Length: 335
Image (cartoon, rainbow, N blue to C red; front, side):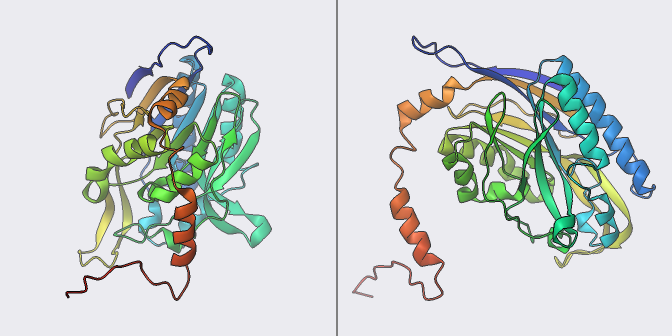
C-alpha cells in the first residue's frame, strides 16, 4: 500500500480566511482472479475499498474519489456481455449501499464511478460517477461523456456516451466535477466543468502504459492551469487477465490481458504545481490538503477566464457542427 500526503498552501490574505479541504485519491488492483464467481470478485473489492475508506476517514479526508469501475475487473476489453452483471442500481446496489454507509460514517463525500443499471430506460447500462454526500445521501450523478474506440478499449460494446452534461456538485466541502477517464483527452470537456463553477475536478480512470502513459503527467496538469481549478487524477493499478483470448482490430495477436494499469495518481493545482505520483504497481491512497483560495488568487493574477473569448468560440462551434461547414482558410493567392 502506497500512502502519501501533500499540501497546497495559498498566500495569506487580509480579507479572507484560508479555505482548506482535504481530498483523497484511491487507486487499487483486483485481488481475485477474473475466473472466480462474480459475487466473489465484487465482494473482494468492496471489502478492500472499505478498508481504504476507513484509512482515509481516520486521516481526516473530506472528499474521496475512487477509480473508474473500482468494483469490478476492467473487462470491457473482452466484449463479453456477461460482465454487465456488475451493473447496479445507484440507490440499492451492493457497492452503493457500502459507499453510502462509509460516507455517513466518516462525514465524508465519496465519488464512486461504477456501471449504472438504468431500469427506468430499458435497463440501459451507463458508466456513471455518483457523488455521495457526507450524510450518506446521493447528491447526484454524471455519466461518462466520451467513450474510447481505441486499442482494447471496447467500451461502446457495453455503454454509450452520457447525457448529463457537465454537472458540478455543491458538497459540504467544495464544488466538484467528475471528468471520467477518456474525457481528459477533450479540452472542452474540462472547460465545461470549469464554466459551471467547479473548484475540484476528479478524473477517475483506467488506462494502460503502452497507450497513454506519456500523456498522463501532462493532461490533468494542463486542465488545472487552463481552467483554474484543482484536478485529482486517479488511475487503476495492476495487470488483469481474462480466461478467453480477445483481439481489438489493432493487428496484434489475440491476448488475455489489457496491459498494465500504471496507477501514478496525482493532484494538480491551478498554479501549475503538482504532487508527486503514487506508485505504478501498488494500491495507493493519496491525501492532499488544498487551500481553495489559490483558485481566486490565480484567477486574479492570470485572468485566463476573464480574457476568454467564449462568444467567439461559440460562433465557431455553431458553424462547425453544421453539415455545410467551411473552414476559415485564407489561401495564398500566389499558390
